[in-house]
Image 1 (cartoon, rainbow, N blue to C red):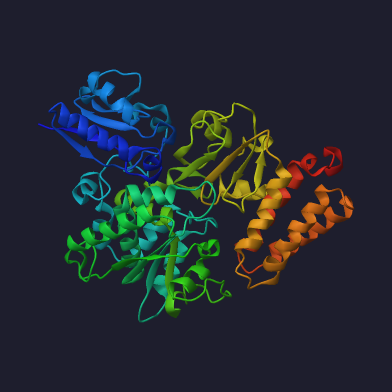
Image 2: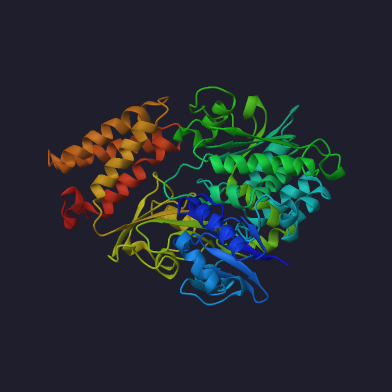
Length: 516
């Protein structure tokens, strides 16, 4: 009987040497005449331990890491194929504190299964949600999603059920489901992990959305910088179609849902839903005026559900276990869980899925272990390059959409980038404006011109050129961008700028007392 050994095929693990480790394990097993089954699973998200190798034993899956090719022979010498002790031993994978203390509803299968093995997916609870949805009316499916309290995980936090109900109620000859997989925010990788580590979960969620609203065609709009995700999704779609989970007659239900992957061309603005639709239609990716809303006139002018990867990947567990089950996690109007992503100057970077309501301190220290440099953490940016910078004084705020909004911040996609006390926050503010200037589609003046002028004004403030006058000018400019931009790129670029100015005035040459 062969011994099952798991080596991740996730992009992060590959970048850290997982392919070389897998090759070394196969070669060493052959040299020792040990029968093994090498399974390429997704990463569990504890990236500081990658490549993390797991071995199936009678006592469960035993983990070792981070493993390099030179470690492989000593691991065999130590009897790791039967769970033997070694300096790289981590014990049972499920007992690693970083993983044990999470609440993985959306990412629960990542790292457990072979991402492309459909039977493995089904054996770990896959497609229960779709089977339930096929027995329900579209209205009842939408109601279950609405009752769950699920909100868009892409940034705005708009209630998913309301969006779906609008599309369901629209009268049209054809409707679409579009997945925004153009994951381009700094410090974010949860979408990629789903697509590479549990692609059927996304496929199932999109199929349920199609059943709910009456859409027969879906598109995954994927950033071109994710070649591994692209190949995995293409193959998963092919296998799902061959098994009857996609196509003209989904599992004999008489319902139709087809799915394709389309690659973007690297424009950050195409993460905005209307720019994405323009690009998907083969046009230049620029923002559309709203109204009409995409839910009524979206792709090719037809009613369209647009959700991001995590939103759609959260749907199967809701339909499998019920809206009330999902709603029991979280706080206030922020229900369920969110896969937070720790990046930047952090000792233990990776994916942490928790219910809303925990604090930044818990993420940074209980899970992240503090800064990698060992220096004090001075600031974190939450929600991508347009997210506000939070100072240490706000690390005890509960991670909740409304609570963060009260403090001029957002949770967004859950990406968290960490900075220690060596960071220059004036430079970070300038970068935010410069980023907006580079990535602007150019359609509206506040974003196109305001961001360029913003860089110039910040430079004058730092150089102490009429500092008081230029601070007032920067604040006025930010107000114009927030209230006059067509989309969130221009409308949110001021968030990191103003938060840096308000919380770290000394980096701009301003005394704290004067800023107050």
